[in-house]
Length: 287
Image (cartoon, rainbow, N blue to C red; front, side, top):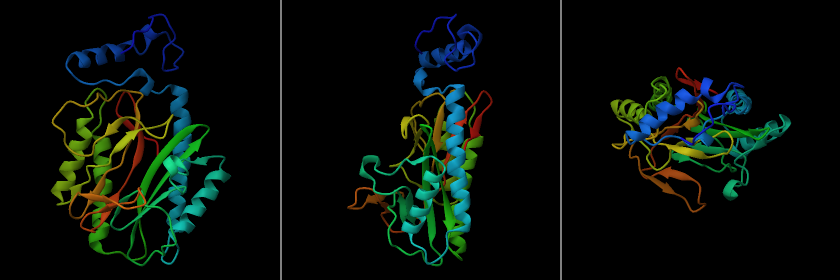
């Protein structure tokens, strides 16, 4: 960690001196670094004020996702969902982060059935039995709130509903297993173990990410097991966990639009996502 004057105001915004506050965190991180673990730069550890701003943006994203439960139905287009979210985002004095991000043309991502992620809203009409993922990121007062969830369109098959349930469990269990000053490895291990237990595969080419002050920040969050030491989870970190779980192969194909990712075997993919903040006792869901 970068050296800080012991008598300086602590970076976390507690209004305490550094020696009375986060110095213990930095001493622990320095020890992990000596053991060969990557540690977060202090710029990745959010201040109290930043966390409060991120929380407000995340709560708006959560509200929009909740409201869609009463809106999504067979026969409506994914463009109509996009337009509703766009209007509601602006109405709440926020900005849709995906719009024009690296030339992405819409305000949300809508991924149907075999679409793994980054589906572009279109004139596609939702059909009875479709499984739809909606991914929303709001920017409120400069802070980002990122989340996605699955929606069952009308009556869906028991198999599709079960896959969505297991995917949500992968997310929830990974969050429950997080404790400060353990490595990020625990996230991928938890997700892969639960998915494989139920005979699903885990997408490897996409992952979660740091967020809050920017759309995408370090670290990259892997959703599967890795054999090398990953970054130490530290109080003040804010990141997403967003496992994509497939019915068949984990392999994906990117379509010609440069965004839409589909399963190679055209089988179902499901995804759930939360933004979380790391506290002194664990992880708190912000979305």
